[in-house]
Image 1 (cartoon, protein in one colour):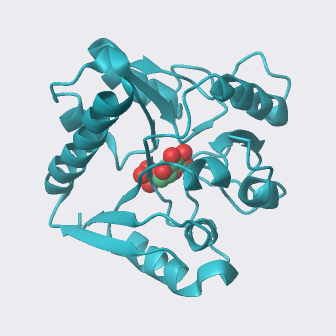
Image 2 (tube, rainbow, N blue to C red; image 1 turned 90 degrees about the vertical axis):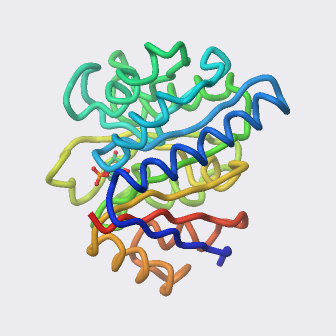
Length: 235
Ligand SMILES: O=C1O[C@H](COP(=O)(O)O)[C@@H](O)[C@H](O)[C@H]1O
């Protein structure tokens, strides 16, 4: 199990300030070192205040590529679409936002293969992977289901794959494309941003269960070597 450091905040605004500051620093350092930055950002609702804050940062946005950590297989513009939420905030800044979804793919596995192929052209490893987590313990779109083992233990060079959660999560009951465990674990920096008592309890349980956890986040973290910062806000 990797080293995990918890950062606690009273509310979402306080967490947004801190996390946006950290992400800005990582982007600036990557641009200084390599001339460009590639980061993965989660979907869902928790990170939205972080994105609003980060978008105000003075950065050379044209040198920044953003990939969703995962996406729901819905049309672009749909309320459930993670890339749509990210693109709304960062495209106007000049960042490149790469979707993981492809509307032409025949099924979720084909969508995953297309996303993987697209990511093979991106400078790798990620400079940062910021993860969210559901109250069911999924992270990115690594869920229990027929594709869990492939997401966790597939070939190291595979960056993304299509998954069908089982059971389907009620808040977004659709197939997904997700970064693979290998893509997440190979990033240069790894952070988690969550809020609320329930998610904290789930994450603490997952961490204590480690590699034997039934929760995807526990399995993901048990095989990560780099230190992880967990940012948690009470509300
Ligand atoms: O389905 C998803 O859920 C998680 C958590 O979302 P939240 O709304 O509870 O913050 C998110 O990290 C993931 O990217 C998304 O696809």
